Image 1 (cartoon, rainbow, N blue to C red):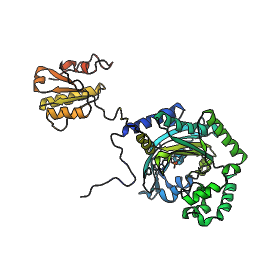
Image 2 (image 1 turned 120 degrees about the vertical axis):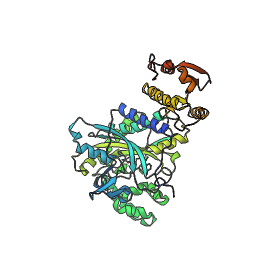
Image 3 (image 1 turned 60 degrees about the horizontal axis):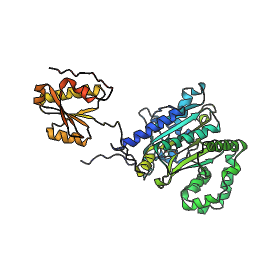
Image 4 (image 1 turned 90 degrees about the vertical axis):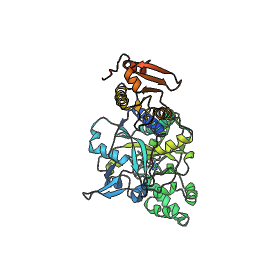
Length: 434
Ligand code: HAM
């Protein structure tokens, strides 16, 4: 029979990796909490319409990348490709607009996109992100950018660049689009097939096309800054002023237009050259029209999301070999010989765990020697040995695996010995069950 493999574009996170994953997630949580963001968990699947209306019918995500299916009740369901539309849906559904504003939330979780898998591009990837709803202050745009940068700084991740742009609003963007169409219509033959299509549906996307000839053409196009209305211009000035106040270094990049339709005004991406073709560590921006698009009242919003697998890749390339402190790390191993001793070892293991001492035993009927070897390979610091003689004598042998020193310990003093120098259960006795 053939082995079943994981679906293309998905990964398993192996035991040596959770160290980085956990450190990353803990860093996200502490940086976000520190800035007043609380966690939100939305469903992994939503009604397809949420993304059709939220992300936009003409985007690559909705056009070709969604995992969509009919459930048994004939409803069209989609595995979430991103987290912003679900958060805004939850904000409206639970009338979060009625409470104090802005509502500031963060999330960590899997997203699903049927893309062509390649290095850094998966069909299931994990994002951490924040969304701040109910305030249009440019300081909030700068805050979310600074949160993303803080996460990377706390992780010791360096070498990234912040690219910043504004894509205007429903007042000024159509003017810009029109002039792009006019200018590009003279060069239709030079555009790639995708961009020829985009020219009609979303000419802004020509600006960030990866095709070499399209990129050359894009360089010649006027930047949007010249077309922004007064409000968008003032807002953008406010964002850059706040970023400067934080000494946060950024580059103005008129080719950052983002691949989701909900953006207004500020857009940004954080890129890292070590990632190759898929160089975006994270991205986001303002989306002041999204709540209305989803049937709610006009609510300003701004946020970002960033890929965890991509951050892990950069950290690992930089030599981050840190392992987890809590990924099943065992400090005590009870090695037992004989049926009675094994039952005793099982009982002691659970008693020690109750006292907060991470403990394990053998489940493979190994010889004593093999148990010691196994414990050593697991990096266990202390092994407790129980055999027939020990049972009879009401004592155990405690072996320090670092020095090799062995001590005979009365059974009732075992926990005390094992917790020596800690405040844990110092005076506890482990009663021997006869
Ligand atoms: P996005 O740029 O589509 O934005 O995705 C955010 C990040 O997720 C990317 O920068 C990248 O690191 C990671 N990512 C996306 N697709 C993949 C993939 N196929 N494989 C691996 N990593 C991937 C959003 O999703 C918006 N919701 C961000 C946002 C939040 N805007 C405002 N608030």
